[in-house]
Amino acid sequence: GAVVSQHPSRVICKSGTSVKIECRSLDFQATTMFWYRQFPKQSLMLMATSNEGSKATYEQGVEKDKFLINHASLTLSTLTVTSAHPEDSSFYICSAIDRTGNSPLHFGNGTRLTVT
Amino acid sequence: AQSVTQLGSHVSVSEGALVLLRCNYSSSVPPYLFWYVQYPNQGLQLLLKYTSAATLVKGINGFEAEFKKSETSFHLTKPSAHMSDAAEYFCAVSANYGNNRLAFGKGNQVVVIP
Image (tube, rainbow over all chains, first blue to last red; front, side, top):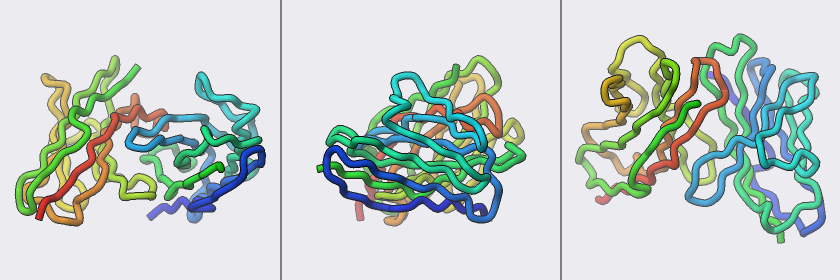
């Protein structure tokens, strides 16, 4: 089945530094990838929609200058948390949909970000 | 706009007993409905989906869900709980099958009591 790989699975960084999270579709081409944020014991909140070769579309309230998204190829999207602060600590999950758009989302295993 | 409601954040069930997780949806168009399971520190795994075909949908791990338009519900059931069913379960709705803009419920944390 379709696989989405997310890396790293865990990362700890100091306040003020930037962290990059990668999301790769391993066996299919994903024209669209999505980034979610999940707080403890809560549901997933869509942060942005990433389309290959174009600018990401951010949800209301999400700072695009803080959460930089790049979708440079049909198999890779990256989320960079810039100048991270402790309140950015969260579980970040990506998902992808194949080129047909006619399938459910495939989710990565998530990245646990801790900012100290 | 679409939304789902999942009541009761924590659900405790005895091993071997029925698992019932409730999901009610709101949608201005015919909905596509999904149930996902999440194990600790992992992403979401699709359990089953409703895409306007059969109203009773069978998924993986012995789960099934029934779409009831009159009740705007899509409850998830499993006849006999297993210890491995302990996880977080999310109901989600979208406007179409390939629509990535899923609206998730708040989730149910299932605890299985031996």
